[in-house]
Length: 428
Image (cartoon, rainbow, N blue to C red; front, side, top):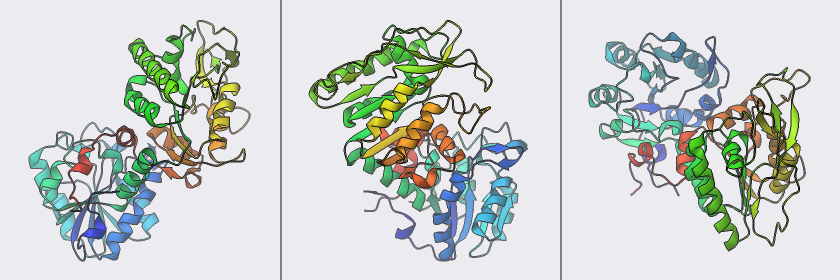
């Protein structure tokens, strides 16, 4: 259920529309390396153009130092958007002021204008009233379609809705429906695979998954404090000591849940270690004795493993083959999977093939999610780094839903109200 008005609920014919998109895409030497977010904005754009609307798009990109930060200019996005829409996309070198007003004045029905980076102005992040009023003066209607920013109360997500009739775009509606649907009424068994770096960043979503999922698997650097909390040696692996009490709390919650119902909380039993993050680094597999929290009926025995022999200078950079196979096997039993966070360091290239030396764990899990081992569950992919990995492999079309929002998807999964959504018009 999506309770907010969308572009379908308002008269847009011939109107001047300010569309908030999320074009925060990766750039290298001025060239876009991943245009997934741009492509996902097309249905809303095409709908607006079908209504003969004048479309003004605003967005941010990166963390610019100021208005002259050309490395974070949206101009490359305008060029790529023009190719995807197969129609001219004008570009304004500012988002407010006389330059923006002049560009809007020259806009005709059915035409598109992309404004320069909102964050060239610090007033955007400050949710500044004066800046917002100037931005709102460019249009008659506001459409929020930047799912990746609706968890923030910025000028273009919050204050803008006080000046213009504000409704949701088709992407925003799609994102909310997909995520809330999986969290509230999933097809079971429901499995959550969670990676990343810091437990403190994922505590709320882990608590939520323990409450609603049937199987929770931890991987990546996120697993390290869970191992340390069990007195398992992790060598020089990345972890924050402040995360240890959080990890212990999460495991206690999992133990309580496993006594109530069939439930598994899995922390890796083995890993790929190396002394540096590099494609030429020598790697090896190390096993340890990690506690798997589960209901006794379904998993009555702990998996035998050796004590950790990780050396002081070594780091855990990937889950090992046993853990990858165990998680992949659990995927075979799941009907719905939520995946957020890689199982290891996926950025390291390989000297001998397409899979890097510390990304085999993630690759095995991905193969399971895509049905390579026989069963393919519905998979919701969330989190910026995870989506980036999926896009780099050109796999997005093969998953059930690949979210364009990192922090926004996590907060929505955790059950939070998002300012940029709450500010929109209610359907009532």
